[in-house]
Image 1: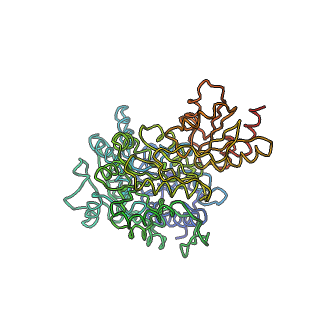
Image 2: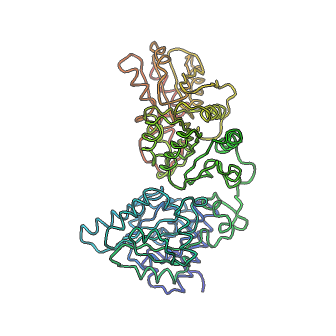
Image 3: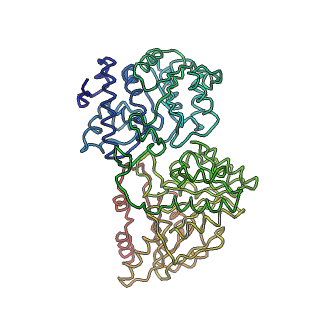
Length: 587
């Protein structure tokens, strides 16, 4: 049978008239369209290829959007979007960017939540189910969650409560034996045993929690999926449907290397190789991994702890193998990573926890209680904490400065270049005095051979990069070189600005600030939101004094798929704009 005309599919109603043979052809047509887009545009490859049949079956059996589906993470919802009125975004290159990579209620009534972080789907769905019961509704409520997401604490909390609802509550566990990389945690031995025994093993977490349990061994077979979903549709008690699927199905290179093709830049469909060949630019992830691997050989007590994103911190499979037991992946469980670091430090080990900024916010309580309150000397490396990080609204990384810098007794260092980053990392790995956060600079790796390196960063003073008068420019982390450019522009206009690298944002160098009380203007610029940020600490210190303080930074907004340079212009953060602010203020 020839491929289905995908452009004719406007809603799930268009596939509910098809027979199973047509649905299989639909799956083939969708897979081909997805592969064409993914190879040309990039995106989440493996998760979407592995869920095509399951999503077709869900929309075929259930009466969406009246029946409600919540997709965990939602990085597997390209097929869902294709069936719910957004097909053109996957078949026409001119419209590839019309949709986000995640569910988004602004796009469609079929999308219930904006989701890009893991493990919350079951909790969200339990709220939908409870609201339905309170209002006397009868729709089906379905949570779709991957096995990798089950390691997140909120997934356990949602499952624990969901089992008590006593009404229709369907949890689809998409088990492809993978997270982004390999899974880590005791739950995965039980899932493997269930797969190996066709769902009959006595060890069954879901039954133990109070759920009825169903298993589909061929989770990419539309006939089996339809039969299973029909059997649980309108069920009046909580049930888990466990699907054994193939991540990356239909693309041999993705099936063979599931970690590499979890997400990919544009690539050659035949070889799987990225189109942008050549030597990769130096990255802070590689600098970090190379340095800590070398230190591991000298310090057997040093352990790198990560929460399910090893590739983001420079630890691909070969480096994980080299590190051996000194590399700890706790799965998608940032709270566990941070609390575990406290225990490691308490017992004399040297934990270095490396996380992406957007995910560390899940462990705020552990930073406050288990680390800072207990004064545990652990090191935390924060990647992608920048306007130059991930630009999707679900993965923004520039809220972390305000989040962490206001926790008592937590030292937050803000290196400006690779030399300063590596020096701060080297010091923190060995010190036993306090918890330290090192925020990796944003953008491309910057080298500065003239940066002043300290032997001890426990109480760093401001680094006066350039002496001057009347105007002080304080550039935090990524924005120090911007302030240096501003100084050059002001100097060409006859002004003599001072440039300061604060080195850290959790305290103030009051001695240096006091020396600025005869200045006319202080401008701060930071790679984070203004509200609650570092600049406001400086402004508050000067209070009612005659020194004028202007704080520049990013907006307290969920900006989506932004262009970093355009956003900087909107926030008056280009060198030209800052120089103009300075000169106009002094007139």
